[in-house]
Image 1 (cartoon, rainbow, N blue to C red):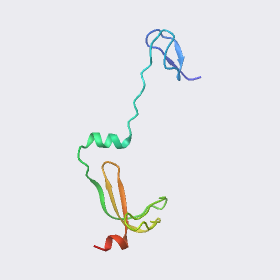
Image 2 (image 1 turned 30 degrees about the vertical axis):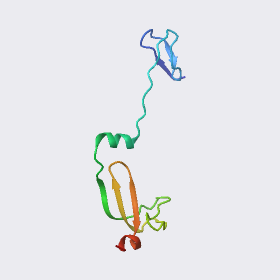
Image 3 (image 1 turned 30 degrees about the horizontal axis):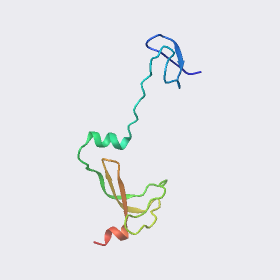
Image 4 (image 1 turned 120 degrees about the vertical axis):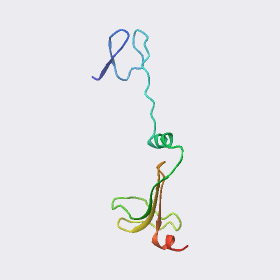
Length: 98
């Protein structure tokens, strides 16, 4: 059975218990998403990658940002990735039409 030790009285308590019998309340860990971490580090959002790239072979549900054409693994497409985690793809047909 997984246990944690109360820092006040030294009694072992089950890890899911939020409070010890002596009244000590265990602090909760705050969950921070990866996207939030990236925004906290960089106030400005910059390009991580911006250029032609082959679509990864095991990618699912990728589609062109303009024509919604399905982008399959091995296809060549324009890829833009930003420091905040956003990613965009455009197919050759749509990105070639300026």
